Image (cartoon, rainbow, N blue to C red):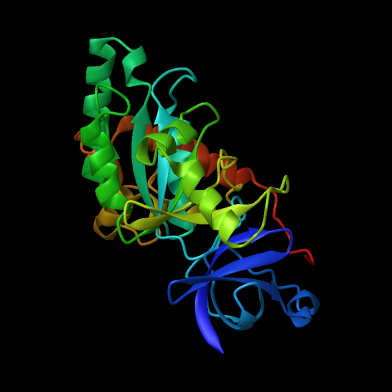
Length: 298
């Protein structure tokens, strides 16, 4: 029995990478009975008589898992964000950042389409980028959307990490990947040839080696799951709120009407972005009014 990582799933097959080799495997029948689905990124134990035939025997504990895309053990998410066309929204950006925070995935912000805005508008994004860096998020912003300095910064962040690329439709996710790896199609084609897979029209999910790390090939990942957390937990997923919470007068402060709130004091002092706080209030209200979601059998 060997250990490896699922690098691709396709039509019920799982390509497992182990000791420099790819093995084509299927999941044992007891996984279906237990309603367990192996995910790309899973660390697994498997047995294989040849690179083209094997079985997954056990899925090792996961650090995290996403449903869109269906991947596991992700370290970070790159939120590809257009500054124009589609119109920029701090609300959408913050929702995506929170979705990653809830899944314990480190966010990275990459701004695109900066060539479509005026110099004055670009300076506004320079200020905004500095504010998000102050929160603790790595931000890639260049006057040209895919300038080498921005790509180099992103490549440094990708090294030794497992990453998903996410963003609104039209934000430039595929273009970013093509700039990172111009021969990306060739690289994935070589893997297909090695496994004698041929061409498939079935949707697949895969982890590709890029810049010394692994990136989920998920061009359809433009959304995020609806948040189902308790509204009282929301502040934990705003890093700047989380850092200040211990200074609030009341334990469990939700940073709205409570006296002695450190977050509101920081907001008044200009140390917390007004847009972040406004988006927090909007999400808080949505969560407070959200009907309970009862677990259903999957």
